[in-house]
Amino acid sequence: IKPPARFPGLELLGFEKGKLTGALHKNKGRLSFLPVWAELGSDGYQLTPVMYNGSADLTALALANGFVMLEGEREEYEEGDEVIFILL
Image 1 (cartoon, rainbow, N blue to C red):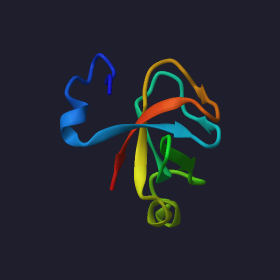
Image 2: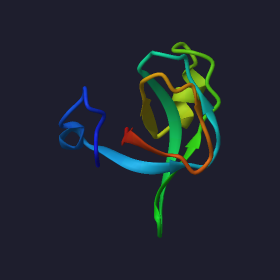
Image 3: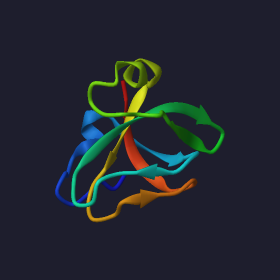
Image 4: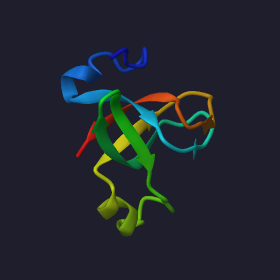
């Protein structure tokens, strides 16, 4: 895993790499942790975004088994993009 430059050592905390199975949108310039359902397949982790309506969305949090960590100026992530995440 190659963690973002400003967060060295994330692999020591249990972060992994995986590929998105659907698109995600986040606010530009903000570090975001968004809920996903992670499944380990023959080619690594597949991360399915969970519909999410903000930090008080308990249903989304209950349906997730991980969070993707998205940072930087990029707002849109597409299916197949490799991202880092942590299992709950």
